[in-house]
Length: 152
Image (tube, rainbow, N blue to C red; front, top):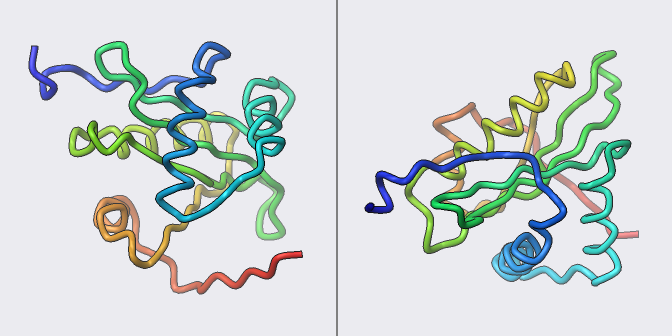
């Protein structure tokens, strides 16, 4: 069966996904030239699995292999009495790109946001990430907001 005929399935993260999620999360951080301490990675994974946490993840599988993930979280808004959904991290293994997994991951997060009755879903990417931006531009127009951030 060719890769094109194997369907990508998106589902909530499960405990058994940890090793592959960690490997993909490491590749994601390497792409963005970022370093996340092990303690934070471990805490993030625990939050993802905690039913009471607002931090969640969906996993993309193709042919039984995990090929991507999207980490997202819900938070209060001053513009609505409904929560916002922030899609914080999205990554698809480079060897599995081009088959629609990233779009399906976004749709998976959107479905979770609808269940939670979220006000909106939002995300951002680096300006230089042209492949991601070309996909995102087909999903929704980009915002005119510029992000400022200051480490504390």
